Image 1 (cartoon, rainbow, N blue to C red):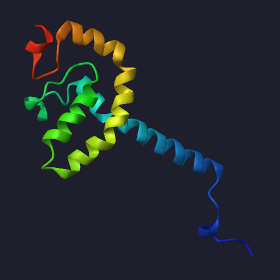
Image 2: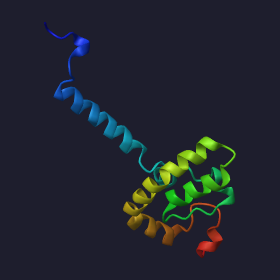
Image 3: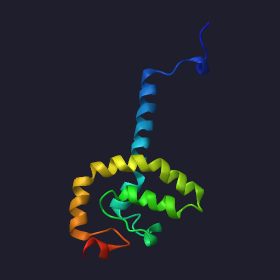
Image 4: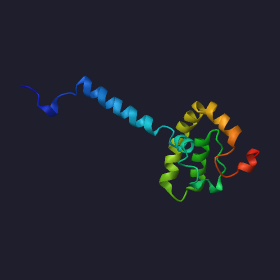
Length: 116
């Protein structure tokens, strides 16, 4: 007796395709705060009360979200989950952000402290 379609095991191609899609989706979400701060998307959200430096901006932005976004529980949870991933992404971006910090100071909230 032949197994029906629902009983068949996925082919190697299906497993590979599913794995690639999952990896792409995960990679797209990696370091969301880092991507948001470096592209300018997150330069004004909760940072009115926080100084966000160029260097490790994703980590600083996550910390600001956690500290100031406590009333919105979902945002704080996402920021906590994103924090270690942003730390890795910020480390990769460190050569770029060091230069940008020296040239332009903080992204927001405290440029006077950066020596401007």
